[in-house]
Length: 292
Ligand code: PMP
Image (cartoon, rainbow, N blue to C red; front, side, top):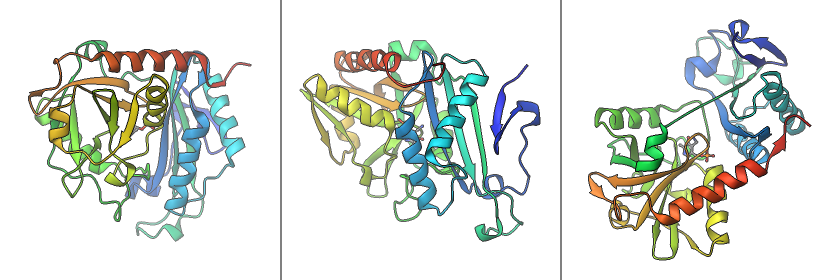
């Protein structure tokens, strides 16, 4: 059977969804993307994801072929065509086909595709037990080079870090920035809990401004936690009461050790569990309806 894919204005069976081998998304990682979730027949935080997509595209001077409204519609149509209630949606815009040189001005028409499928990033048991994380040697990209604020197709920085985490047998890798401060994990933002406060590194520490990160900050404030953005060191994580990661695919996942230092009790903390509960309630109640 396979999925129906939105490709440059049409829904096509996945076997027919093909892009040129001269596409600079493939040749150079020249493009941007978003990962979005659908829950319970709705699309979660669609506007927030699309704003970030347009901002990423603007930063690399790439024109998204559809306007905000039409792109939103195309996403809803793609989820509907695949009859999905819960989904993981990938929206990709590439520079399009060019020649073998890297000059983007040779690529005249951007490529846009939307995949609506499903995802399970971590097995359920890891949500119950928590993750063991290691710090990796690969530093997060410099903001002045390839800004981590751009969700670009150029993910080698994160992939190199993931390879290191895999080699160490860890579920995730913590990336520091060039100054040695904590930035984020390979595909998730990081938070700690200490006393009655929630801490996370600021965007200028070299992190993607996660949609899940932002909603978690709101949830935390709503349950009476003080939310603090500040530069953090590994020491701050070793000595925290609780730690967790956030991301669209992973949602909220507890971390129970960093570099073999047990965090808190070594079990997912009460505040983490509370935030997870609130988050899962919201994802089931809110969002852009697909079938109305
Ligand atoms: N950081 C990185 C590097 C990411 O790729 C992602 C998304 N997978 C995140 C953080 C989390 O962002 P969001 O909550 O918007 O998915």
